[in-house]
Structures are given as structure tokens and as C-alpha cells.
Length: 367
Image 1 (cartoon, rainbow, N blue to C red):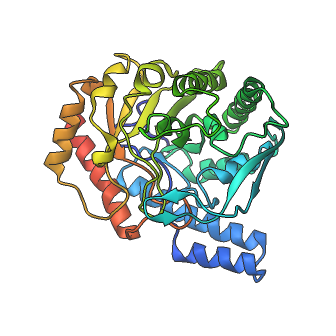
Image 2: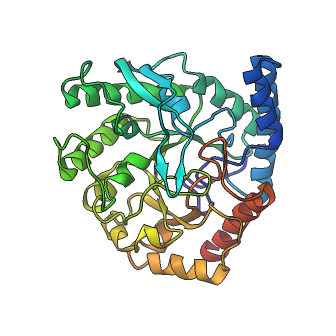
Image 3: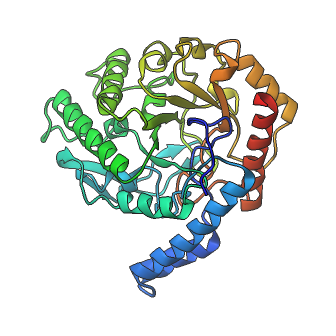
């Protein structure tokens, strides 16, 4: 039976990824070793997705995800199934705070376009059947701007970055159409690249473009991808500073991107990280148009299992309301609990306690 829901993003929401259970880790290992089939691995994934959908509904969330249980990475699994993009094992991993990530990335190998046989379409259809109208099934994918991260763009294929951008825009327009036809009504674009443009130490490797030019390009790409989207398709974006085994990639407030991206992105909501001092203050939120996009405050951390002080969280929401009206604010953890298959350093029980805490605080703040 369906329930009446307000429009996403919800007062109590979450970014999407959830800790992979040991059973799933074992099944993936067995599949890689050739001791179980792809079909058996998918059966295990589906059983575990059924379990965590029930759990999300149980803690009171109105939007539920598949926990990204069919993925290894939050972004690579989607990107490498686009035409013109392939995944590969790199010589070294990415640098996070005191950690080198697992070695993997994607690269541009041909003209970019959407693959109509993209596996994420089937994955969502199956998730939606499991949810069965008891909540809103939320689909998360990387932002089109992730394809501008250093080392992906192939200048032999696309000498002009504008041509690369135009094909990415078209690919995402087709992706949004395919997801919509599959039943998606709540889509989230995860974006580390845009947040990186606001970092104090940001440098574009070849020095050809200024920070301001790249911010302008990022805005044109995201808004171009959303051009013509159906009115009842809610699209949000999560601006993340990196989330790998409870570590982070960079720091800095949203101040440098706020006048352009926070002010002019045509999304319905921003999931923003505000769980520690690296995030800066709430002042950049003053650029969010009054009555425009909702701001989902990530003041509850997913990087450890300690439950925040309820009154302190309420105080932070009140502080943010000086820049964005309270009716335009929502609450969530600052990121997912497992942006990669490794997961953050907390237990599954603590994960559910965090999500229940978000729901409880939201009920008290917004009655």
C-alpha cells in the first residue's frame, strides 16, 4: 500500500550508500575466484538489498536506496558502462588523508554517449519492485562533471573540451530519460569534482583553465544535462569532499563555488557536507535562492559511529536557518556510509542508529 509523501528531498534523508554486509563481501570474493556464478552473486545482492530496504523503512526514512550493493565504487561502476569510457587498474591509487585508495579509475577511449543497455537501469527496476510504493526509491549516480576529473579526458579524441562537454551533456540527457522511463522520480548526482573546485589548493594540471572558467563550465554541464527533464523528476546533487574508509580527500568551504553553482544550478536540492571544521561555515548558503533548492544539511557524520548531541545538531540547523529559511532545510548524514565497497569505520548497528537519529531529530525540528 502506498503512503502519502512530501516532495523529495525529505526532511530526514540520506546520501545513499550503506555498509556492505560480510555475506556480500564473501560472495564477491567467491565470484572473483570463480567458485560462484554471476547469477548466484546477483541473488545474494538481491537478498541483501531486500533486507536493507526493510531496515530503511523501519527506521522511518521516506527515501530508500539499494545501498549501492551492486557496485564496487560510487562512481566508476556507472561511468565505465557509458560508451566511450572504460575502467582500468592504475599504477597507484588516489591520495586521501593518510591513505592511498585501491588502484582503479576510468578513462575516455572514444566518443561519449549513453549506453541504452546500461546495467543500472535493470538494477533500479528491481529495487523499485522491492520497495513497492512503501517509500520513494532513490537512484544515485555520479554527476556528469566527474568526467572532468584529472586524467579522464582524452585530448586525442576531444581536442576541444567544449566538444567533450557537449557529448557528456547529451549522454546524461539520455540517461535521465532512460531512468525516468524505468520509474525513477528521485535522482541524485554525486559530485566530488565541483566541491574540489572550491578547495583552497585546487590546481588544474595543465594550467590552461582558471578556476572561474572551470566553475562556469561545470555549471553549464550540469544545467545542460538537466535541460528538458520531466517536472516530476526530482534531481538533487551531493557535493562531497571525498569519503574512503572514513578518510577525506580535501578541505575548504563552498565559498568559491557558491555565487555560481549554489546560486544557479537548476537542481531541486543540495546535499552538503557540514560534519567537521573542514567544511567551513554556513555563510555560502546565502547564495541559495529563497524558495529555490532545498539544502540538506550533512551535520551528522557517517565517518564514525558516535551519535551526535541532539541539541548541538538542532543548534546547527538553527544557525543555518540564518542563511536559508528553515522550511527550505533538511537533515542527513554528510555522506554515504560506504562510498566504496570497503566501507567506513563503524558497525552496521551504528549505521542504523545514525539514520534513526536523523529521522528523530527531523521530526522534532520540523514537527
